[in-house]
Length: 411
Ligand SMILES: Nc1ncnc2c1ncn2[C@@H]1O[C@H](COP(=O)(O)OP(=O)(O)O)[C@@H](O)[C@H]1O
Ligand SMILES: [Mg+2]
Image 1: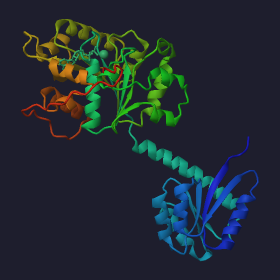
Image 2: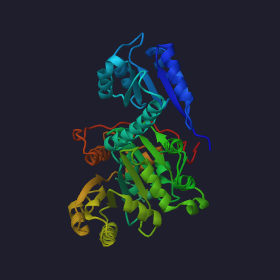
Image 3: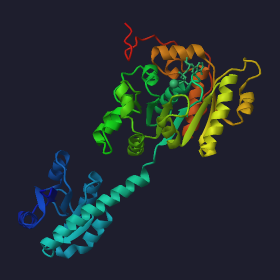
Image 4: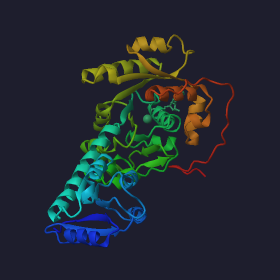
């Protein structure tokens, strides 16, 4: 296999010096260099804009920039490309100074032979790469995975997944990936009026090495902050799901988002559900205040604990809180289920169904409603953001109904 070219940009106004360096690099044995020369800083800046380089050899005394300022300017412009400074014999201290300002190394002209030059380029590229990797891990935070689930169906898991994802993305301004992990129902794309583009089966078909371009373009985008992986569509999708590859996908995208929300189908004994539960930093178990739901939730939480799931990850969410349903209000529900409530969402069937039929979040359809305010406070609580707590104002906002254009193009 041919050795790839190392692309080097020489920024040097002196023809003789530039020629010497070019000869040393192009004559190197076993290494291939592709050399480009700029005569001054402004020419270098233009070239950097149109070509990619692995390293830059920089003379500090140029017609349009002089001394330490030259490295400062270039480093600010291209912090991702290693820069090696070339100095004259008399200014070695300038070389050291340049290293403090971001250069990877310095070479004294006339003193550096071909092997010193080539080694300096190789080590600078490696050192710079590992430095960038370390910086990325330190500064980038891993996404928090929130899995939403329930034992009994119809408690509002998908509705909460959609509305929470929407509010976290568009109100709290976090980067959110919403994954429909509920099989074939495709409720997420219907609730958000999206045309399904990519699902977990498509991702598994990519294998272990998923192309970066694919990872960023595959999800369906809803504004700048919300990306969606839709549900399964074809019978064969079911057989393409491989939990190990789904897990690998979670790992690969975990630095791209602040939150990954996973909607699951009701129940437990499903490979994908189990994976989504295992991966969760927060597991939202949704219950209504109906006796059947509370019974199931109590059983479910108990079983999850038996499975060894850390107690502090399990968060009880009460949906459709309604103090007008006999004795079974939230406090009573908490007692029945034997768990602390993390958040309770009010009952608003009309708005929920309206939002679902519009293919919009409740926050868009009626931002002033009690349910929307609750979603905003719920999202703020999760993000631990300092947003002032949202209070209900009077009045309703009417949104004109738009035609569905997603899965079911109702005419
Ligand atoms: N806070 C709420 N108040 C009233 N109805 C709700 C609320 N949340 C969800 N719903 C309704 O409950 C039903 C079931 O919701 P869904 O999200 O499909 O539940 P699941 O995913 O748990 O099966 C839907 O008709 C939905 O509109
Ligand atoms: Mg659902």
